[in-house]
Length: 252
Image 1 (cartoon, rainbow, N blue to C red):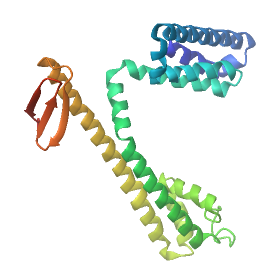
Image 2 (cartoon, one colour):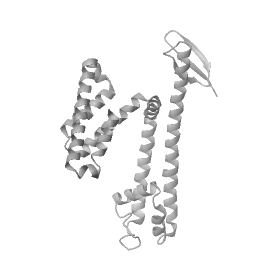
Image 3 (cartoon, helix red, strand yellow):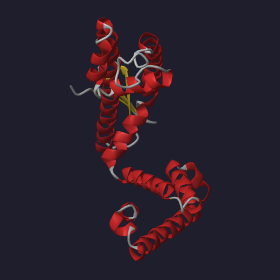
Image 4 (cartoon, one colour):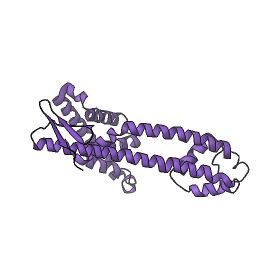
């Protein structure tokens, strides 16, 4: 039902629907029907679960999306926000569950990385603004890249994505031949270093979740469904339950 609702919301943005009042009305009726069905589903889940309903994060997420859809329904942009409910499909696909768990596991490390990146970005914004703020005023660049902090911040973000950064650098180097150094240093320390650091953190989290899956699967096979892994013993995995303590060698 979520998938069908996502399709109907997407159809509401298409010209062959928006340009024909009867088709537009039909799509609106379908979307309203889905809204009613989702509301009924939410009420039934609340009646079944009782107070436990508010202990489930997905239930609170659905409550927020469905409630907001009733109050801001006339605004198509807010209606599109209901498409976020498609994330609930991850709850039904195990591989997506594990990937989501890996991303959540890596969240603290990712926050630290983005915090360091923000600090470095701010430092480079000040440096580039101080060095090259008068270039556009003097007619040396085709666009205003570095006259203000906000303009410099946007330019550096563009450089961070490697979007036509060489053209910007060549315009600046035509006036300051040494300008290649701050550009290259910025790209090396942000785009390459932090990007690889983010990839390493995600890969480590995915590997950890995959290892936990193997341990849990092995626990079920030997009749210990509540088994947990503990990597504090180096090359040995300690598996603990309430009544058992097993040590199994790691694979690889």
